[in-house]
Image (tube, rainbow, N blue to C red; front, side):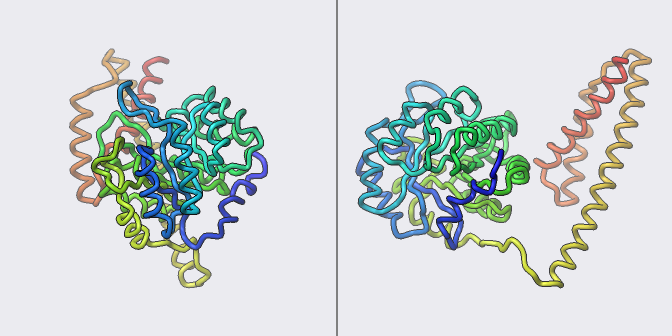
Length: 360
């Protein structure tokens, strides 16, 4: 992607003294609801008022949004409160209607990002627009799909781009609705450091009482802003009731969040930081050496199994190891979630090495 620095211009032009905030209901339900929430947010740090007009649902029969009628309500929001508006688009028709109603910010949802056909259709419809377009990560942790969507939009000469990290689906049960997989967002940030990165704690958590925790983690990782679903009566919302907060709660969250400095010129701080980072580098190298040695042992096991015609996977042994490591991890203040991910990855790599030996 060329001219990456141009991508941050729209965020810089806002000249904010706080992270970007996009807030509003998951779904536009009624004109009264949309306007009431907007008026409660108009004198806050909210920069864009979001509302879902078209709602992609997993199964038919659930509330799928009010459709184009809701765009007129967003126009009233802008006229009455001065708030800029935002909504999700999933096809060319959505884009054309959103542009016709002068919606300021459009985002592509996780279910759309997974389809290059849908993204290309949206990119073609938005060719050369000066609207802000944000791309949510795909449902599953596939960085190539996420990057591909961004590249398609950039190729369509859409300069005001950004991304939304909303977490990823997982077959494993965790405390999150969608696991953050922070390393995916960090990898994207590393590749495109000038691409504005917004966190969506509502979809990551699925629970309003976890919104603050995830928002703070995002800001600690230098995210540029937050998209938080906000409803005046969240318990009775027509969609995603459990993850929406009240305007009053949002205001309190924004007050309580700590904004970290990216760095400081203080010599003592930088000397200590460099020392600690050097220690980390040494330990990382030791980790790789140890894992490499472990794989050599795994290859030896593979050779022995080949000799005796024994299957690679030994489920009983593996479950014993996993249980033991979880318990030992607790002694080192390591979460069960981390231990499971770490040792499952190590185990899979061990199996790969053993299979190479067996198939020689």
